[in-house]
Length: 193
Picture 1 (tube, rainbow, N blue to C red):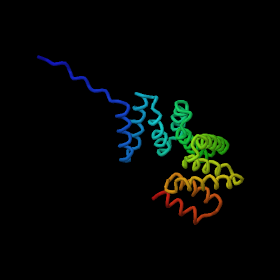
Picture 2: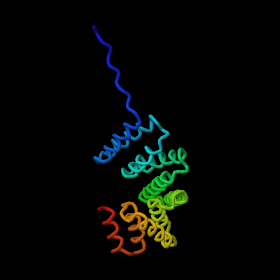
Picture 3: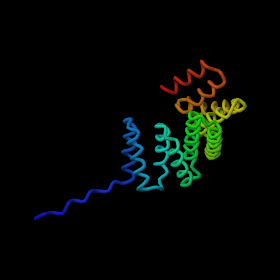
Picture 4: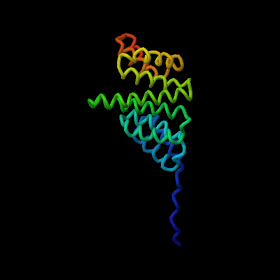
């Protein structure tokens, strides 16, 4: 007697997301990205899959893709402050990429969009430290006339979450651009630790 082949079980979106989190923890970022994309492919309504995906894409220097996923997340959950915060982060990363490519006008537009998204996040959740950090970072990139506002946003972020590496990084950037190098170095070191 020949038995029919056993059907392979179908993985759930939650299973892919759990695998993605483990892969990220193990430093396998591109594999984690693939797993989050699989999870979203199976259930595109779960905004909690988009947030780490966007962060990972920013981490591996793929800001254009991060921005696409972040924009989809905003459509899904426009009242979610974290969604607006990751959108701010994606715009900020794109701005940095455009600066590196020698496209300052396009970079300024990306930084302005980062400011807009960060403010939307803050409007929804005034205790969102990362939104204040992205606001500080983006304002600081828009020129010296924005440094005071950037410093204020960075200080709020530091008050809310002093141990958050994103907060420390943007505080360091604001300090560095203002010429406070020893304080900036200290913040960069704390962000790394």
